[in-house]
Length: 216
Image 1 (cartoon, one colour):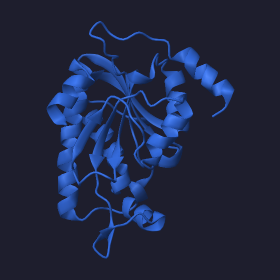
Image 2 (cartoon, rainbow, N blue to C red):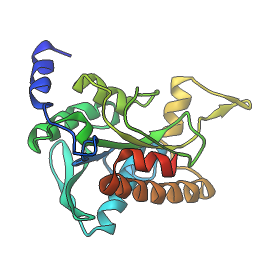
Image 3 (cartoon, helix red, strand yellow):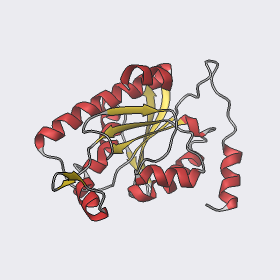
Image 4 (cartoon, one colour):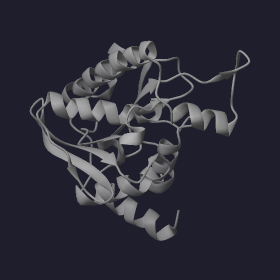
């Protein structure tokens, strides 16, 4: 990341936390790949979450060149939902532009929803910060923003197996993430997406710590 971009980000991220010590989330980004060919893929769980969150709250996405965006009220709080159109591996580019566009004051006002290959299928995990854990969209965001200090909601999709053993081969992992889960697994992921939505709504109303206590 260039020094100039780091400086710009440091200039943007100057906000103060709320009175209870937690930043208030204003930008919720779901990770996934744009287009119908990818819609049902495991790697698009983040898109599933924000799509359902928008529908539940009567928000409508408008498509832009780098992200689809829906802005409105959820639980009495004004928030922006976004789906990058830059593909997962370059999510940071879209997020950086969303932060500038919507004048996000601190990285902790950003929440990212995504899949996690190293968690069991349908397991939900919420963190206030942390590394990318092998998720290339999170990697791109962390590298672009120069910080890990933003909350994330992750849904496990499991790791593929070859010969009964977990596989770390890039081609195997890529094919697995960019494929649709079988019906029974999809049902589990759908239920996990619903739990993720409830967790996000709790984050908006009561903060990340409250959601971690209830859902982790």
